[in-house]
Image (cartoon, rainbow, N blue to C red):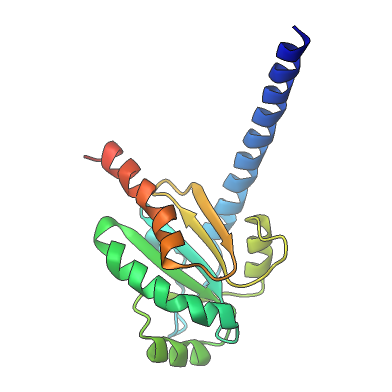
Length: 174
């Protein structure tokens, strides 16, 4: 009897924490969609441009060694899943000229945009308590966070985050 009451209390506390976490996520995602971002030509490129897609948002910088190491995996992942409605967007905390050079060197074909220092605070609110780079967030087609990753991300880790979302999209949109 006491065990059942404890289990019910624990389940209630866990549910409250989950609902609070989801509520916090919704507020942060709303801020993420409206982040002031510019493409490499200086034109405004809000993330809302890619709403409705499975979105992989990668916060990075050209001077960040783990960022440089993970880019080939991001490039291959974009190529692999672009036909399935997956979009990778790199938000760099760098200058457009450095990012342009980097994109050419690494043959980056997914969109790269320039973020402000506000991006660091957004990553913290997205779960990046250390405010480290790179930081990757995967959103489903409804804009719900499905994965978060601090540090360099591998192609296998990206596949693991994206594949279940493809199944979900196929079930809801046959």
